[in-house]
Length: 149
Image 1: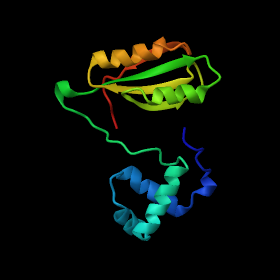
Image 2: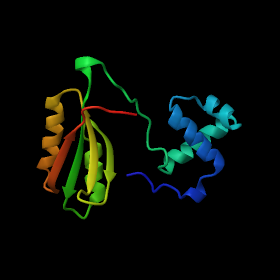
Image 3: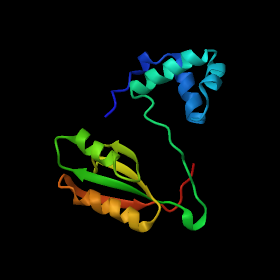
């Protein structure tokens, strides 16, 4: 599990500007980021690495939408769990193939997960695996039909 993210007071305006640029373009080079905020490539690299170590930047990923039959199958899964080791449960979810987002939440569910798989069968296998864990009390699955930005 990553470190606890810093409070807003620990992020200065340069950090926030870098994060905004990375959200807009996670593939930007350190030199491009440096030009955008007025820092050298080396200074930007040091800041980005600090933000990664602090858990503010948790990763970089491709958001892919494939045409036609190659399109991924997505599902949101609400999970009710019974365990004192929520962090351990979340870590186990994080290594499952296709699990792209994990959130602990309040309300009816304890954890919400986004699962993406190349086929309905592979999506079903991931969901069956989660339901088979002894800590999983119950799950509710919503298959994503259309995604809007």
